[in-house]
Amino acid sequence: MPCLRFPIDRPDNLRAAVGRITDPLFTGLLENGSATVDLLERLCVPVPALTIGELLGVPADLYPDMFDAATAMFTFDSTSKESGRRLAEAVGWLTDTFVALIASKRATPGEDLISGWIRARDDDDALTEDELVSLAFLMMLAGLENAVLITASMIATLLCSDDAPATVAAWQAHRSELMERVAPSPFSIRRFAVADLTFGDVTIPQGDTVLLSLIGADSDPARNGRRSLMFGRGPHYCLGAQVTNLIIDAVVPELFVRFPKARLAIPEADLVYRESWRSHGLTSLPVILTP
Image (cartoon, rainbow, N blue to C red; front, side):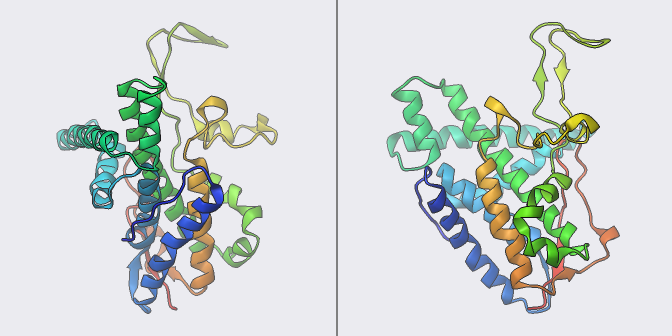
């Protein structure tokens, strides 16, 4: 995989970098001819992994293990001891990895996000050390997982639709609606009531866990044109929203421009989705591209 470095505060440079990441991956797909390829593995995983990893300054050899760790976290099954073991191992490995990476970048800083956060921690005391580790942890895992799943689901939805050419031709007009339809996270990150809260006839006791339904809020008839809560709002707006949008724009419509005859290699009903209450997405995306 290519190793790219680019300024993190210039959207045009970031957009160009995402393009440079996707081009060789699309070129590689041409080599398969009409054979079946798993677009999750060949396109939907590497583009976000390379982009987010480069933004953070994560070495490329860590990307596969980070995605495996993310999968263990987001598919945790509380009824399975094996799943619990994988979860504990994933969290431990990720924490140790980011602690070591932060130490390395503190000694040799770069022009990446983690180096910038280290400067905010050490020079401005704007973060605690735990917050620094947690921020890097969340940005890589949540960013990678959500970008991978939403990209794959958007491609699958278009492959199963007769309107794909029209959607791609007017991409910016349809993009937000399509993203909302396949949003991978039904709930926001869990929160905890710091005091008793009363909503109508319901009281949430202090200390209880609260899960906010993003799908419920976005499907509310009283929404009245309000923007989707997929990426949050206000101070809780997703740090990676801009990057995710750039990845989607570089991957989804471009696939159909380059491979207009692309089709699923299996019936739609045979697509397999991961077993997770926390994050919805495909386990694979077998496609026949037909150059």
